[in-house]
Image 1: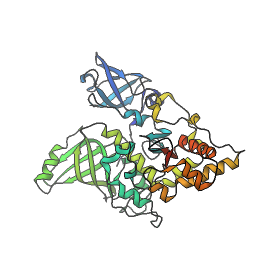
Image 2 (image 1 turned 90 degrees about the vertical axis):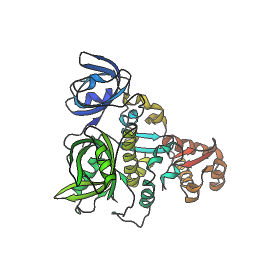
Image 3 (image 1 turned 90 degrees about the horizontal axis):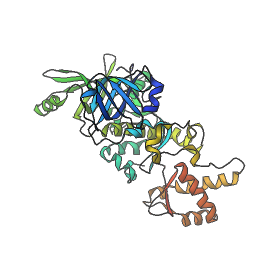
Image 4 (image 1 turned 30 degrees about the vertical axis):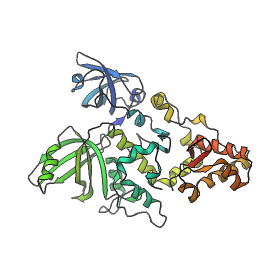
Length: 121
Length: 279
């Protein structure tokens, strides 16, 4: 087992805290131009990604990007996966930093998702 | 309490009903720290790694005090190696990487092995085994992720099971609105605002009103009685008032508070409520 390079779940806001680190997020592709893909992240912020296969994905698809955060708004891609057009739920995970969350209306969880037992210490 | 009682929003979890027996077991007070488990626990590689490093008994791993012999993990396949006897690969779930072996005994196994490809998201169910000082997963089942919503679902399920198994801590946090209930709000949650409880949405009973704090506790206790937990529709407010002999207005006030902080929720109408407590 190797837990030395985890990919932290981020959205546009959280990305700023992890510049230089390995991160993962999902973009709704808006534009593909000159090897740079841009799109809205789950919190509505615009992010750009460079490298990898990111430029081969169609506009309006949701694309998961795993790579190094190289600035407040951009990620250098290592791996990306086309999640298609029917992806809805990353927003739930990225909102989990030490907050209470209801899943449906019944389940209450108090947890720190990106830290502690799950991703990074 | 088993997951099956979460009939509404938690139909979310209906696909992984096998964890129910596990949750039920975890509520048994006679089971000690290393409780035997027959279910399959959803875990992240980080949880397995942390448990392995902190565990004295490397042969029987326990995560959150529960025996984690059989687990389900989800991640990206890398380094696939195919032999006539087995298919091995590394699964990266974003929290870490673990080696997985799928033994090939018959043609069905071989077919499953052929589906495994580098770069694909796969769900692996298997048994954790220590081998030459390393933990690896002997897979019973390996299948590709078809609906990518399954990825966040898996992680939410990991969180839920972690919360269930660390129930005491979570319960304590929920009872005492403290640091966890006052996190620094960030704009990161805008997309799912309706699902979140922001700290300023509830007002805890204040210190200078011990009497009302007592009523709050009494009301919660009524909802957490086994009979109340077993009732599908929970309790009517009148019933709570009758049981406690406290004016209806006070009861409603207490219920309102408990609804806000997530201890109870309304069921069939605005007068029936049930505890969110799972044990």
